[in-house]
Image 1 (cartoon, helix red, strand yellow):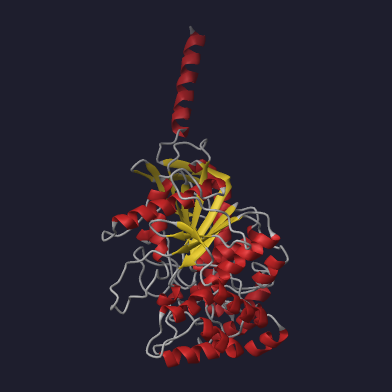
Image 2: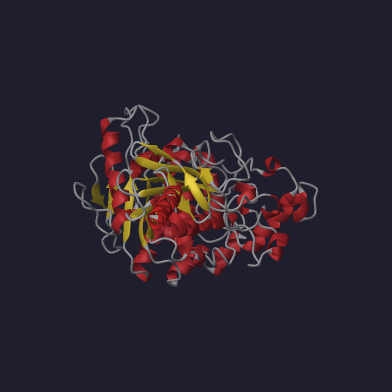
Length: 519
């Protein structure tokens, strides 16, 4: 009888232990502790999950450090703050910003669903994961785990300085925002299985600065093995470095960026990084994009070299890529208010190649038409994408899928917008299927197609699937590009003859003569 009582008590205590260790559906155990999110329309959602220690105080302008463990249950029900930046993002902003968000349709860790990791744009000076356009619910419902990652921007994310380089184990500085992205990917690799994701089937995707980040992560040895596929929307970073930067030639080398950092420090009347670290972060946020510290640099560490040269040598993370841009990116980046100002700007930037480029991107006498705007489009996005596709086809093994987003309203012939195409950033709402209330049936249909392509690619490295128009892999010999519009079709590389002239300019820029001219 005594043995029976003891056995019953032991079983009862064991049941209590099991009960205490059993997590509710809203809870997940990660390496740092237990998180509690929410259940929303069949998805488990976790917001504001720390993937690194707060980069404040002594950690300002340092590589992200591992997150601190916690006891008990940590609520993960609200977005973390946006990084410090101009303006006031909806979720507020703070230096303490290194958090990520997860939408998962998986009910257990056994499902091992593909993972899509979003990297926002904003010129490396703005952006946040809390933007309603980036809500991951609709994509997650297509059978993926959707994650969005915050990274530092502006001076707090990319400031280089000789003192920062001297104190760093790598001997370099700047690129803290890219290191944040890499730290986020490492956290995902270590923990995403608990959310039903597959740590060995991760796809990174981003637009604008986020798409450029994707390009840079594909070239960074520090990101090797942290993702298996990549999607870049209006991204790519294949232009040579230049002291005075322009869209498409945004990169500076470490020494130049360090001198910019010295100039930046001097304006605050301090002489040491320790003093600069003690200043209120509000004083350090960018007012203009061209201020020092608002863009990644060729530091020899995160970004080893000119990315074009890295790809020529086959020194990159050879993963399947889906890359493209929008038909009227130049509409969002005006290059002068008048045709005269436009021509002057082209001469200033392109020097001896200005006339040959204006011949293939002509400007009208009384206005700056789309043909001229396409010069900006291709310098910043079109040539970058075309070069990425050609180089990877030449030196890599993984397939390339190339697209051209060309969906826009049809304006009356007498409208000032008659020749307008799809501006910069228009594609993002379609990919996430988060369209506004004014969207048409055509918009909804295209969003469904694009979300299908993107999630199919995340699942198996190929965008094709049932009910979708066939999308062939890119081959420089045939130049097949998927034109994304309500009735997608395969066409040739847009404005390829003009791109070939642009190509000659960039080739010259990499010559001793062109490099000297850019100085």
